[in-house]
Length: 467
View 1 (cartoon, rainbow, N blue to C red):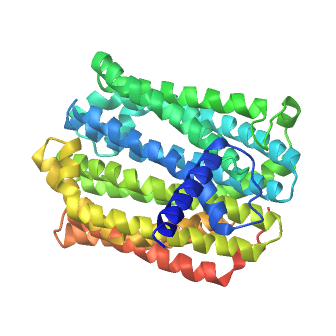
View 2: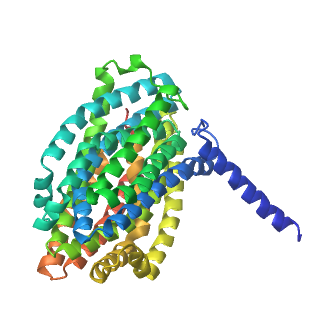
View 3: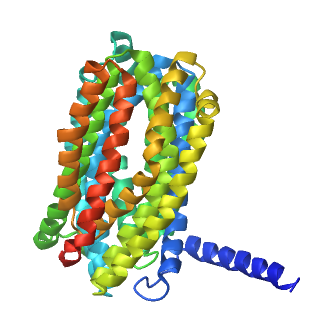
């Protein structure tokens, strides 16, 4: 008896180690058969690590930029708020690619999955040209429109211009990782982002030292560009189930129409979300640079923990898409339930960390006591709903993985625009709570979104969507 427990422990550790190695290897797996918990684990490990690197970059970026001054922090925050419009388009295309590629893989048709991936690239490149030119040309106006002070607008114009000019690498990085995830090759998506953000982290302090704030923008663009080159190499090489050949790039109206249909509502979904966050940032900016800097510091820290949870929810999207493609809707539903339970447990732990340790976490990143006070308040309030956020992420990605981007879009439209924005205004302005009112509105709204999503998920209409 005294030997059985250590042996069981050793066997468990050995099994976890073996599964982790398999998850990171990029070896193709059939996620439509076998243990659902094993499938969730194999997909979640690289997806969580992928998002962990994104989290690390967000913190490192604001850490170095914070040394330049609070105007620099405000610039990055306001630019990122507008840049979420670009992220929305990229994510919309990415979720369309994930849903369609996953269906084709589930149907055991990798050639058509590769063809779909190439058409998604065609669509992305066409859209990016317009975004890059508009953002680069109107950079100072963007900052002023967002409520930046005159000093912030002058200091940050070059940063905003460079970031928008390089938005093509943002678009491709998101899209191609969505293709890899749809194919079940989460490991390749992870390595792409690790390489991109690893380069970014190395270059950021060096280029900021020589070029100031715009050095951060240059570092970000170069890092993402390196990651995209890595992705394109492996798409052409055929790492995993996807291999893109030149013939697949010939325009295919049927596939482009299907991608556009999913991407349009997917992009609208995130545009609604992003535009809401822009208005929330604009509302906080009414209370000065200190308030917006504190808000942006808190958002970066929140993302540090939210992004790994988002990684696990991405696993649900892949499993739903592939299992629906294999005509296994019940297995798809059980996969979502499993991922939701794991995510809820993780977010419970994060909530406790923020409630007990918000102050030292913020002080490590920021040295301004006034900014710290705002950021700590934001962390403690918003993290109260983290368990709901974790479950809500999984449900949203389950809808999107099924190609049902319409349902989360409608939920976001009503919850963010008809509820969150008016509530934030009333609490912050009318009730005189200031930035705290905005934080409370975020907490209430995100919780409501999860409850509504759960009710609609249980109805099961997402199982009938065809892509």
